[in-house]
Length: 130
Image (cartoon, rainbow, N blue to C red; front, side, top):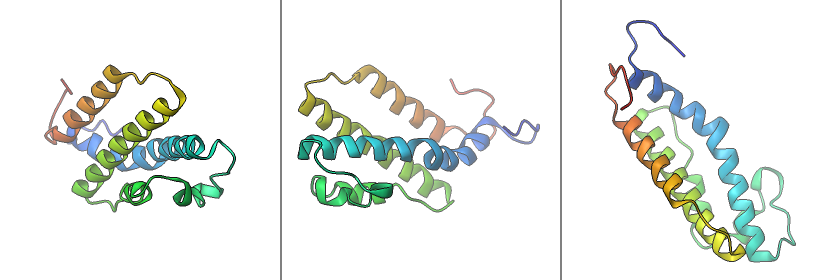
Protein backbone atom coordinates (compact mmCIF):
# COMPACT_ATOMS: atom_id res chain seq x y z
CA UNK A 1 0.00 0.00 0.00
CA UNK A 2 1.20 3.50 -0.80
CA UNK A 3 2.24 4.99 2.53
CA UNK A 4 3.56 8.30 1.23
CA UNK A 5 2.54 11.29 3.35
CA UNK A 6 0.53 12.77 0.48
CA UNK A 7 -1.84 9.81 0.45
CA UNK A 8 -4.58 9.38 3.03
CA UNK A 9 -6.43 6.15 3.73
CA UNK A 10 -9.48 7.27 1.77
CA UNK A 11 -7.42 7.75 -1.38
CA UNK A 12 -5.58 4.44 -0.93
CA UNK A 13 -8.77 2.43 -0.37
CA UNK A 14 -10.56 4.02 -3.29
CA UNK A 15 -7.68 3.09 -5.59
CA UNK A 16 -7.65 -0.47 -4.26
CA UNK A 17 -11.40 -1.01 -4.52
CA UNK A 18 -11.30 -1.94 -8.21
CA UNK A 19 -8.40 -4.35 -7.72
CA UNK A 20 -10.19 -6.02 -4.83
CA UNK A 21 -13.44 -6.23 -6.78
CA UNK A 22 -11.73 -7.87 -9.75
CA UNK A 23 -9.28 -10.14 -7.94
CA UNK A 24 -11.21 -11.20 -4.84
CA UNK A 25 -14.89 -10.33 -4.90
CA UNK A 26 -15.97 -11.25 -8.43
CA UNK A 27 -14.50 -14.81 -8.36
CA UNK A 28 -16.36 -15.52 -5.10
CA UNK A 29 -19.53 -13.96 -6.49
CA UNK A 30 -19.29 -16.21 -9.54
CA UNK A 31 -18.81 -19.17 -7.21
CA UNK A 32 -21.93 -18.18 -5.22
CA UNK A 33 -23.94 -17.80 -8.43
CA UNK A 34 -22.76 -21.28 -9.45
CA UNK A 35 -24.11 -22.64 -6.18
CA UNK A 36 -27.39 -20.83 -6.75
CA UNK A 37 -27.63 -22.34 -10.24
CA UNK A 38 -26.86 -25.72 -8.72
CA UNK A 39 -29.74 -25.46 -6.28
CA UNK A 40 -32.05 -24.69 -9.21
CA UNK A 41 -30.85 -27.64 -11.33
CA UNK A 42 -30.16 -30.29 -8.72
CA UNK A 43 -26.42 -29.70 -9.27
CA UNK A 44 -26.78 -31.55 -12.58
CA UNK A 45 -25.21 -28.91 -14.85
CA UNK A 46 -21.89 -27.12 -15.18
CA UNK A 47 -21.55 -23.35 -14.90
CA UNK A 48 -19.15 -23.51 -17.84
CA UNK A 49 -15.83 -21.76 -18.26
CA UNK A 50 -15.95 -18.37 -16.49
CA UNK A 51 -19.66 -18.93 -15.84
CA UNK A 52 -20.51 -18.88 -19.56
CA UNK A 53 -23.49 -21.22 -19.05
CA UNK A 54 -24.83 -19.58 -15.89
CA UNK A 55 -27.36 -17.20 -17.46
CA UNK A 56 -29.59 -20.13 -18.43
CA UNK A 57 -29.76 -21.40 -14.85
CA UNK A 58 -30.14 -18.21 -12.81
CA UNK A 59 -33.29 -16.33 -11.81
CA UNK A 60 -34.51 -13.64 -14.19
CA UNK A 61 -32.38 -10.50 -14.01
CA UNK A 62 -29.61 -12.14 -12.00
CA UNK A 63 -27.08 -12.28 -14.85
CA UNK A 64 -27.73 -8.65 -15.71
CA UNK A 65 -27.02 -7.78 -12.08
CA UNK A 66 -23.77 -9.74 -12.31
CA UNK A 67 -22.76 -7.82 -15.44
CA UNK A 68 -23.34 -4.56 -13.54
CA UNK A 69 -20.41 -5.49 -11.30
CA UNK A 70 -18.00 -4.60 -14.12
CA UNK A 71 -16.79 -1.01 -14.00
CA UNK A 72 -14.27 1.33 -15.52
CA UNK A 73 -11.78 3.08 -13.24
CA UNK A 74 -14.03 6.05 -12.42
CA UNK A 75 -14.37 6.00 -8.59
CA UNK A 76 -18.16 6.44 -8.60
CA UNK A 77 -18.55 3.59 -11.08
CA UNK A 78 -16.22 1.37 -9.08
CA UNK A 79 -18.18 1.87 -5.89
CA UNK A 80 -21.49 1.26 -7.70
CA UNK A 81 -20.02 -2.02 -8.98
CA UNK A 82 -18.74 -2.95 -5.50
CA UNK A 83 -22.18 -2.42 -3.96
CA UNK A 84 -23.88 -4.23 -6.86
CA UNK A 85 -21.58 -7.21 -6.22
CA UNK A 86 -22.14 -7.14 -2.46
CA UNK A 87 -25.93 -7.01 -2.69
CA UNK A 88 -26.06 -9.64 -5.45
CA UNK A 89 -23.84 -11.94 -3.38
CA UNK A 90 -26.08 -11.52 -0.36
CA UNK A 91 -29.26 -12.11 -2.38
CA UNK A 92 -27.75 -15.23 -3.97
CA UNK A 93 -26.52 -16.43 -0.56
CA UNK A 94 -30.02 -16.08 0.89
CA UNK A 95 -31.60 -18.00 -1.99
CA UNK A 96 -28.93 -20.71 -1.88
CA UNK A 97 -29.13 -21.02 1.90
CA UNK A 98 -32.91 -21.30 1.76
CA UNK A 99 -32.72 -24.03 -0.90
CA UNK A 100 -30.17 -25.98 1.13
CA UNK A 101 -31.72 -25.27 4.54
CA UNK A 102 -28.57 -23.48 5.73
CA UNK A 103 -28.27 -20.35 7.87
CA UNK A 104 -26.91 -17.02 6.67
CA UNK A 105 -24.77 -15.03 9.09
CA UNK A 106 -26.77 -11.80 8.96
CA UNK A 107 -24.52 -9.99 11.44
CA UNK A 108 -21.48 -10.69 9.29
CA UNK A 109 -23.31 -9.57 6.14
CA UNK A 110 -24.49 -6.36 7.79
CA UNK A 111 -21.03 -5.66 9.18
CA UNK A 112 -19.42 -6.18 5.78
CA UNK A 113 -21.82 -3.77 4.09
CA UNK A 114 -21.39 -1.22 6.88
CA UNK A 115 -17.60 -1.41 6.46
CA UNK A 116 -17.88 -0.96 2.68
CA UNK A 117 -20.10 2.10 3.08
CA UNK A 118 -17.69 3.56 5.62
CA UNK A 119 -14.65 3.06 3.38
CA UNK A 120 -16.54 4.47 0.39
CA UNK A 121 -17.32 7.62 2.35
CA UNK A 122 -13.77 8.19 3.65
CA UNK A 123 -12.30 11.54 2.70
CA UNK A 124 -9.11 11.26 0.65
CA UNK A 125 -6.98 12.50 3.58
CA UNK A 126 -8.46 10.15 6.22
CA UNK A 127 -5.92 8.70 8.66
CA UNK A 128 -8.21 6.04 10.14
CA UNK A 129 -11.32 4.13 9.13
CA UNK A 130 -13.36 4.41 12.33
